[in-house]
Length: 232
Image (cartoon, rainbow, N blue to C red; front, side, top):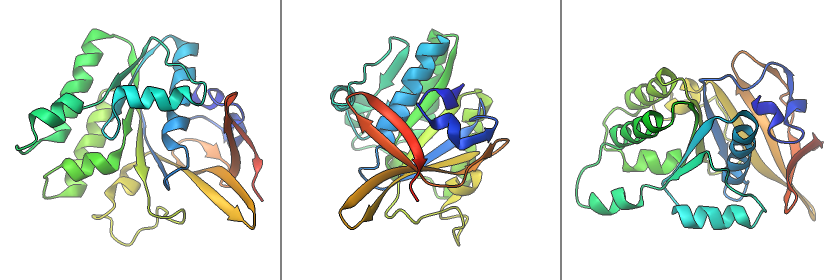
């Protein structure tokens, strides 16, 4: 189960879990440990299940990402594969790029190579959207999310937000279609109170699961990541 892959995460669920085959947005400000949290959760899940996973990075090279994870004491399991778009960006620098098709082809390649590839992460959706040249963002996002579900992948799409108070009740559905189309939204953020700074996690939306809506403290260090009680 995904909820047992991070110490304390199961305490945020009253019933159910992150649904298999769903599309989950992982949002938050810079420095909230979004990439670190998802990488560790997927790593632990894969180690426990023996399934394969794919982590696609648009903003960092594979080597840079692994160095960052190593600073937290995280080691990549053999069945977690990292794709970093580096060569693809160089080859198409002066051309229009159908990033959705490129990503679908990349996923298909790994799924054909590994029969039990069940987990996908994209880091980040911001970079993914900025590269796209589509005219209708809502339509293309709907297509992309639908294709991920069709492949029966549990997908974690990391998205940086400008502030920690961004939430699903956005005025324009076309401008922020991903909030409405996602099956779940997990927010990671930072709370500053006087000299006390705390990182937190909050499940804002999770279809088919009963969960806490409170912010819970996240601790990260050489010993890994864990979730403690409510920050308030």
